[in-house]
Image (tube, rainbow, N blue to C red; front, side, top):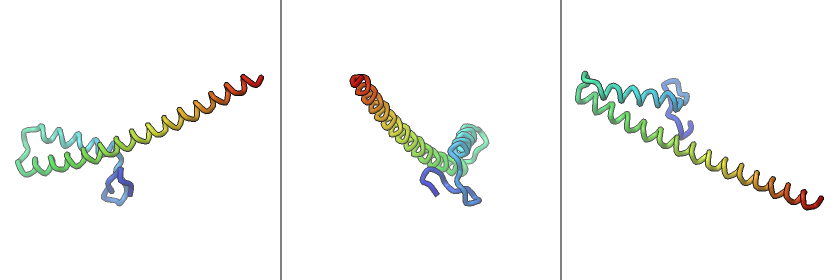
Length: 90
């Protein structure tokens, strides 16, 4: 199990999108009028936990994108430097 997803009832991982849908459903329920206090508190707690988990997933994804961007920029700079050296040699 990765840190990005919680296990589902079948033991697999719950995708980010499904957790986001669950969070949206919780918000809709909390905004409704037919919710008891105890159920509201339980849903709020679940929503806060989901939000923290989803924020962590997004932060890790952002870090990966930044690392990939730096790697690509470095590779492009190396290629450009190599092209400049080849042009001078001609």
